[in-house]
Amino acid sequence: MYNSFGDFENKDYALCRWLRARKYNLYEAIKMVEEAAEMRESPRNHQFFPDPEIALGCPRSLYLKQYPQMCIGKSKSGHPVFLSKPGILNVDGLECITSIQGILNYHWFDMYHSSGACFKKSVESSNGEYKRFEFICVVDLAGLTSSQITKRALNIVKIQSKIDSLCFPETLNRMLVINAPSFFTITWKLIRGWIDKRTAGKVELYSSRKLWQKRLLELMAMDELPCDYGGTSLSTEDMMSSCQLAPSIYKIKENTKLLNVR
Image (cartoon, rainbow, N blue to C red; front, side, top):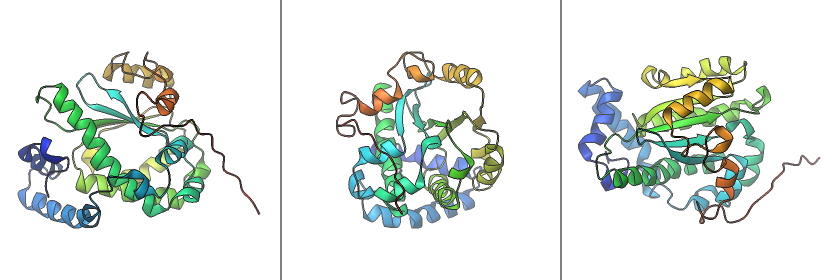
């Protein structure tokens, strides 16, 4: 019940994540674990949706084409680095192929199975020395418009934030929000109220490419960072369509377009 990422995460380290999240207040940590167990009950009955396409009700590749998100490499400290591109996200388009519940089901899959696989790889590559199960998240807001920030979109973010903070505490090493438009400052103030202060303190906002590229290269080696973000690794577009990197996910190059029909 306490171990988020399978047998390869030491139980003591897993429990320490809940203690850190509650500043080592034992009573509050126990309360948090109990609340997490209650929230996890339904997805646990589905084994946290090991088949993402069953969770979504549509091909995973089609979903990720609408909302790109992937592990792009690892940091210099060994943490997996995840990238998402909500700047091109269209909630209306997603709801044409799946449901809000399907999106949340996929989030359980992504946190438990995808993240778990990345953490397991980090443990194996470090000969068991990797203990602190944390990842670095890069959120690219390029292309984001104010019209995309709807109540439905914010509600998804709110629920996902609650799942992450309650059931997967202290797994965020830091989050870099890049290409942030000026109006996002107001949205961030709203989102900041949904997460605890400790997590909010790990978020860095960047609008200037020069600044966020410099920051990414401080965290990642040049050959780990995709070339479209200033490194020498494969571009994220190539990662999305590469059978070599993810043969079970990206089998076909897909082009999609949302059409509004009266």
